[in-house]
Image (cartoon, rainbow, N blue to C red; front, side, top):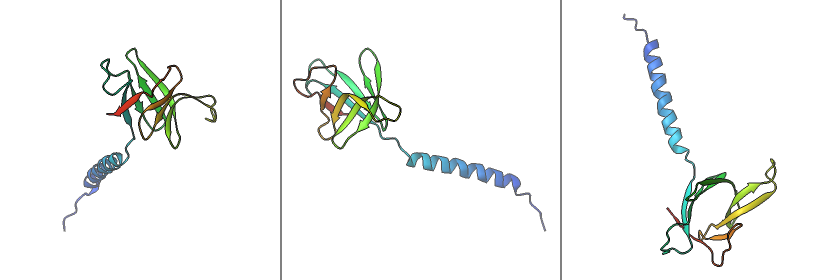
Length: 122
């Protein structure tokens, strides 16, 4: 009868199994990220005015001069980017409102919108 020390094999198998499970479950968990390029009109000669990256809790407006990170509040019809006024996240000041169906920006606090800004999903 041959006695084999299975401890090294067990350690190697445990490492292999833990790595496999980590990759398996990390691929199943994915963050939703929506990237939009926005301009005054879809065929605007001036190009893209800015881009939006919309995640699950934050949104980023990417401008030519830099980036602006904002809080995200989702309603039934809009993604609202802005800032919460308190730690309990009860009060919210919207800066941009993106329509979920049309992907148009219906409201921009610091821009006068005669027509909604058009955005396309990238």
